[in-house]
Length: 107
Image 1 (cartoon, rainbow, N blue to C red):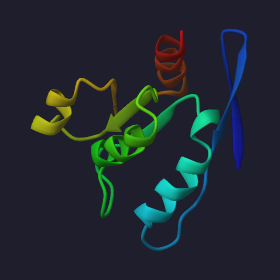
Image 2 (image 1 turned 180 degrees about the horizontal axis):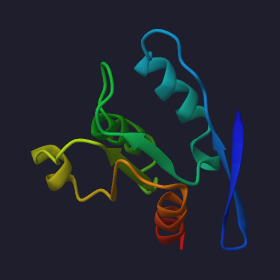
Image 3 (image 1 turned 90 degrees about the horizontal axis):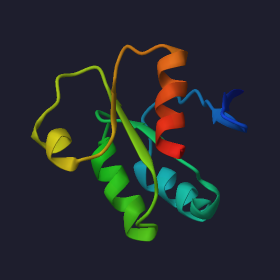
Image 4 (image 1 turned 90 degrees about the vertical axis):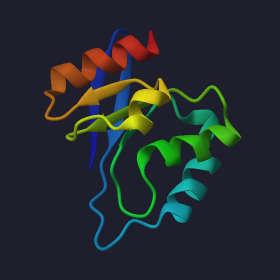
């Protein structure tokens, strides 16, 4: 399912996929890597199976250093998150909070 948000004059598509079973990090990184020039922002959870959000961002930024990211988490920040200097949005959040945060990050 694709949802659309308005961020300033830009229309932002939010792709949602329902995954069955475990997420395959290497496949996800491969798919994202093929589309890195087109990706305006990566929004990822900090805690995920097999490969956490910070590790995912590090891997993607090996291929595109200027890739904007937004981490989300429903857990108290741990050392990796606070030391990462990556933007964070705490869960739960509303669609308006997400839209404002995206607007802030994309200018």
